[in-house]
Length: 308
View 1 (spheres, rainbow, N blue to C red):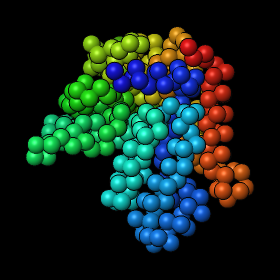
View 2: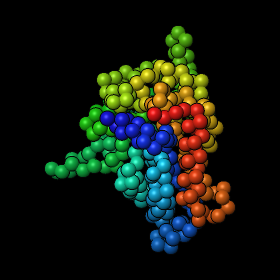
View 3: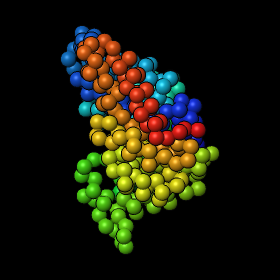
View 4: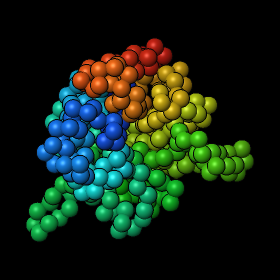
């Protein structure tokens, strides 16, 4: 089961973190951009090549330290089809290096559209008599606020392909409370009801470590809500955004974890991939800077939890 794979990588590396590969072209060091632009011009193709070369270097520097990467599709979509090709190559390269890949796509549609998304990101598409894989991520993020119709097609494909999903519950953005914290029934909230639905949607798919295929997104920027969600969702693996640049701390994210430091993974994007911008070396040391930042994040979180 897919979250078993992720949990075992976390245990082996003693590192419950995931790096968001969300590079704008300006996040890419100048020497990489220059080489790509010389070959392809200052075009979307040039930018996409620079992003992919940057990602490869980051993956090389991090693959023995960090168990997973999480590319956000928007950063690749803005570069057109060249960007989507860079994303597919990034996922494939991360797999070659043994990393777990969470495709941050936040899809939320129904019917045949949801089925098509599920096939594209987790499954296969039939072409003649052949079955062809698309992006082949291990896991995707979903917006489940359209209900089970938007989630079940993904869970079906995940079951067939031994993969998983993370569904938005309580997100890290400042405006999340406008809907997610609205009162819903006696002493409850919208995000609380979503938590119950996620547990329900995943029921019966528990793996070796007790977690279902239906994980949840719960932001580090709201530690009180995070603590409530962890208690309310005992069988749900949590993806925790908001650490670092958004203000979440290691002390905050500790509430996402269960016994033996299990059941959660914490994301950082800019804090790691842009670490080179703080060293004064113009990006020549971007791999070393990213690796040092990833290790520092791991050690920071592990002050509060013990992974076993």
